[in-house]
Picture 1 (tube, rainbow, N blue to C red):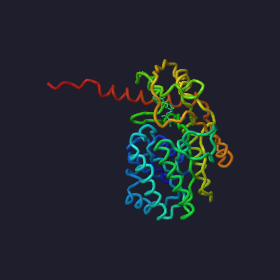
Picture 2: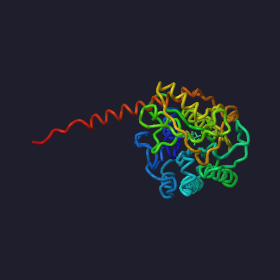
Picture 3: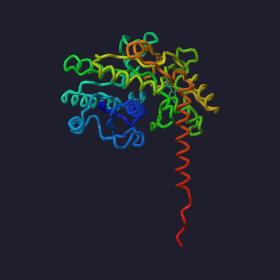
Picture 4: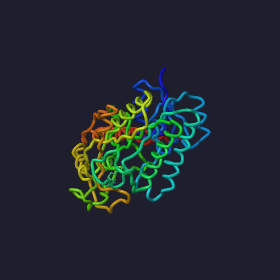
Length: 343
Ligand code: UDP
């Protein structure tokens, strides 16, 4: 019989790619999403349950009604800058509501959990590439809210036998290689989709947040990892847990960093467009350089990232962006068509 996975936040960017990946690999999937950020059309409608992970009654009812083998949790707020301005939102959603979900799992004997964590738990790293044993010193509430859940997961494992795998993503990017799914945040704050907006002429200029960092060109360096490769790692982690695997933590990145400037140049080449830029102050909460050492995930989970090249990552994101633009122009052509005047 197929194993059923509850994907919390399955209508969002990474979650929707995960749902597609699980279905293609023989899992049953149920999605719990409040659509605060996700998109209804990103998941098969018969699988979507509308609601919050922090709604105890709803979550308990789902666990009563469905034989859930494991939970994957993507339902989090993810904007570093916003988390600095509105920390309460991050601690409530990313921490307190996650605790409700975990407690309901514990009470229903659902003992396998895959957690989307982040490189932001490391803060400003002492050295790069970063390995999983690097100390955790988050420098923004987003990273802190994720580090707090990681601690809960360790303690729930020891006390209740709730087994988790924590996946610390570096910069998730790219889109479904088939072109069906992609990144659609509103408002968009992430570098690659913003740059592609500018390439498409839908945005004036890209603000480069800080040009005086201690990096070769002065802009921040990040490790961009393709969303399809993240999904592959989640599926391998799920298989490991379902086969009796223990609590573990893995970094997920490509092990190569690109500066903001390099990303903009790569996007200009892929899209064959000029990308206007302007200097802007540093964004609070941004460490200068984040690069993953993902040797452990490769060795222990058998993870083999497929789309490691930055140009490929950008090309897939661009393919999705262009598809959305074509769909929008069809809709606006239909709505703009003149309505016959009544006589
Ligand atoms: N960034 C930028 N301008 C933008 C958006 C992002 O210079 O309009 C920079 C940001 O400061 C960071 C990098 O691009 O150094 C990646 O930011 P993003 O928000 O995409 O991901 P994060 O690193 O916050 O997860």
